[in-house]
Amino acid sequence: MSIVLPALAVAFAAFCVWLAVRIVNRRERWAKRTAVGLAVVLVLYPLSAGPATWILHHCDLPKPAFRFILKLYGPLGLFEAHSPSPVRNALAAYQGFFVNLGGPSRL
Image (cartoon, rainbow, N blue to C red; front, side):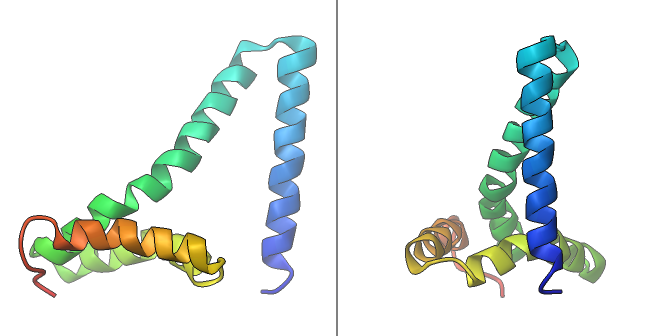
């Protein structure tokens, strides 16, 4: 497991460089759209963790849906656990805002 994450990081960096070359040298439209889509996904995934936290704490979900949400945001939880304390505190405060939003938690 210790080699998988660095290998994925190197592969992602190589993909970004390859995509940048396609955008700059060939001016391909699909490459520009892919870069924009990738940026949107990388921003929206962490931002959607807040509403997902609210759903987990305030909605009566069936167990499969509850487990699905936990698995979906598991990588973000690992990132939060292994990040520096300012990043960890910011993510915890963001999710804590949604836990307290709209009344007491059901959990």
